[in-house]
Every structure is written in structure tokens, then in C-alpha cells.
Length: 360
Image (cartoon, rainbow, N blue to C red; front, side, top):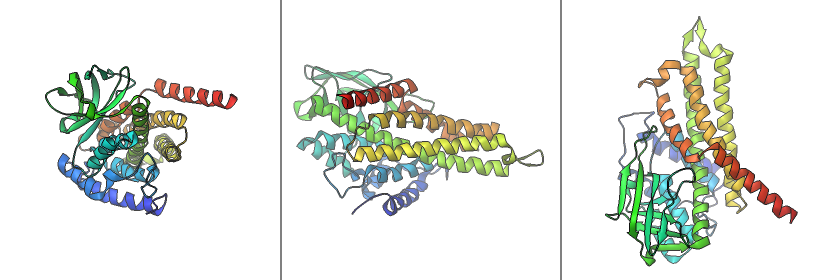
């Protein structure tokens, strides 16, 4: 199957919309789907097997098309383990070894829950490997309490990408957060690392994690796009329905500007999602794209909830309103994309490298 922009993107979007509407808090806050049911759904739909970051299978969906699922996930404000599982699978496939591909197949079948533990550049410790043992604490790891195993990027004399079974040697502690997301601190304290659990070492491990992390950034940004589109619809409808001073508040330019700010920010993020996805699929240098994508997506998460709250005023903070649900999600996304300073530094560094290479 040749999956590309257009019809196939729309098909995935339609399927995603139907699937996520079943347990979207925007539709019914009492409607839930258990973690196990979500994983089974993802496996049955074949979503855990979409895409191959190595480009080895030309019949697999390109990243930009996979983004359709995550756009609908954002529109429904569903928080599930799909991105975590896909990131672990992408890193395993990119590692390229037989053991890594076997693990990727098990993740793709929904047979095992593997959660990625990649250290954040903004805060937390690097998990280190020394003398066959892991030490360190990774923060804000999603769904860590549900993991059968962790896919750990460990730093040391020779960096390693390893599968680490959950158990007594790994401590998982819940991290309360403003976004109300299932985040955990995962602590390794001289956790034994068996040689057969190491999937890649050195530059191979680093490259696999870098590629998987880049793909995750694109799909996470697609969630922001979907959420922004839905929040814009909610805000515009409210501006039409809410009357003050003899008419709808949407007739005031100040309200129109706030809605326009949301629309422009969401559109910019959508453009970065598409350009970064194409660059990744083409095997191009994506670092400048990634820095811009992360910066714009983080800003969009902030701008869209700010504009929506300004238009809704006090009602936006009430339980009866859905706006505060977007605010919770946006807090998580802003953290995921990192600081402006880091993202801008990444862009400058990547452009400096390009200029140096072109001048050589």
C-alpha cells in the first residue's frame, strides 16, 4: 500500500476520530478506556506497526501520514500510551540488531509494554552505565507504572541502548503535575544490566535514540495541532453565542484578534510538522527543523490556551467548561518540547554546522 498525503491521510484521520471519540473527555468525561483496552485497540488497528524509521519497508506509512492519528488524538484530548510505545519501537528498529527487531515486533503486536527512558536535556539526571549496572533517575516518564520493561538510553564510557525489565531493582514513583498526566520518576540504583539486554552501543545507540526522539517530537506536535484546532472551534462558537452589550462578543475586534492568534499559531505548527516529517522520511539533516518545530509547538500550546481563556473569561476555569482540560494538556506539551533557549540553541548550532560544511 502506498500511503501518502491525501486520501490515505484522510482515511487514518477518520479512523482515529472514530476510535478516540469513544473515550474523549470532551465528549463524555465519565467515559474511559482502560490502559489494557487502549493497547489492545492500538494493536488491533495496526497502529503500533506503522512506519519504519530505517526506511527498510517502502510499504509502510510515512511519518507525515502517521501524524493524522495524533492530530485526531489531540482533537479528542486523549492521553494514552500510543506515542510512548511507538517511540520505543522506533528506537528498537533503528538500533538494527536482531534482538532489537525482535523486541520491536513484540511491541508492535501489543505483546509487551516497553516504555522509553531517554534523559531530558532540560532537567533530571542522565542514567549511567558502569561495570554492568545502571544508576540514575529519569524524570517525567509516562506510564512507567504499566511497563513490562524500559528501553533505557544509558550514558557511560560507551553509551548503551538497553531493555531493562521492570521489577524490584527499578523504583517507580508517581510525579504529581499541573497537567494531571501519568508521569513518574524511574530510579535505577545499581540495577544489573545483562549483556543480552543491550540492543546497541556507542554511536549506534545514540543515533537510534536521536531518530526515535525526533519522530516523537513530530507526532507530539501533531497532537498540539489537533488540540488547537478543536479549541479554536470551541472558542469561536462561544464568541458567537456569548452576548454582552447588546450582541455577541465575537463582534469585538479584541476577541477576533485572540481567535486569530490561535489560528495562526496552529497553522504555523502544522507547517513545521509537515516539513519536519518530510525531512525525516527523506533522511535529511533535521536538526534545524526540529528546533523550530519544538519552539513553535511549545509557543502554540501556550498561545492557544491563553487566547481561549481570554475569550471565555472566568467560565474557562469552571469544571463545566472544557477549556481547562486543554490547559492541563498544554502544560505537559510545553514541558515535553523544552525551553525556548534550548530549542533556539539547537537551531543556531545546526545552522552553524551546515554553513561550516558548505564552506569546507
